[in-house]
Length: 63
Ligand SMILES: [Zn+2]
Image 1 (spheres, rainbow, N blue to C red):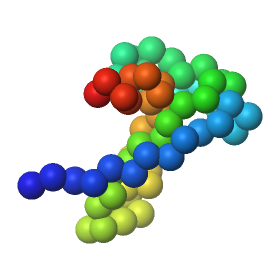
Image 2 (image 1 turned 45 degrees about the vertical axis):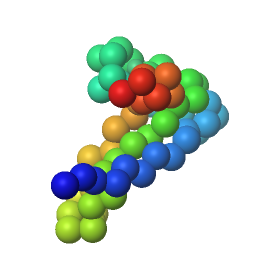
Image 3 (image 1 turned 120 degrees about the vertical axis):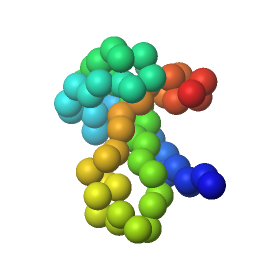
Image 4 (image 1 turned 120 degrees about the horizontal axis):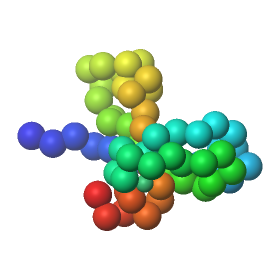
């Protein structure tokens, strides 16, 4: 079984916090355009939103 993933681009102007990228374990620095990814899992609904991960765009493409 598989899951669908939601991927939303985050623009540099909206990226105001640093996040840990799960792909490379480096920080996504504030002001860096990147992608927000979360599992589209209707069972867990709201929890899935809390489980959002911030990836470097390049890291997500190769993941
Ligand atoms: Zn990364």
